[in-house]
Length: 134
Image (tube, rainbow, N blue to C red; front, side, top):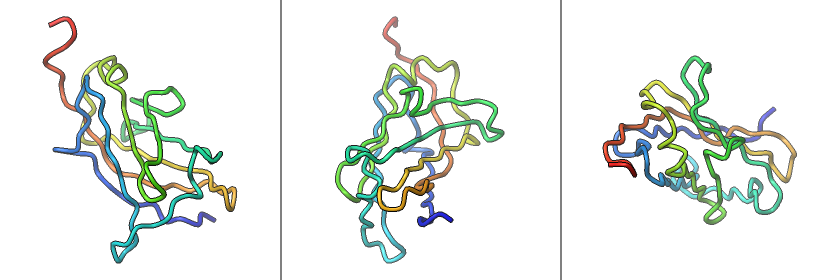
């Protein structure tokens, strides 16, 4: 049984992935009272395993994943996770990601060795008008 209840955040509208840019979002984990949660048990610099994927709602298409290097996860501090989609990764993707796309981020806890889903939600990506060749 998982020891962590995943938090939900939708990367839509102003938080959408901007195609062709280094898209970086910092997410602070907080409890129901709004107090920061110590997430050091998932710190990948200490040996914890972190994984992420952005997929179509039917799971048939993987747009980005940490396994492919198209999502980079790092901890800014014990409360805040940095999520990055490098410009080269988003620029290389044909088309856009629709509002119905989903993402999940999970970590393997250093303290329990359990795999926990940490963050999930919907995500979208817009069109890129200006490219290196324009």
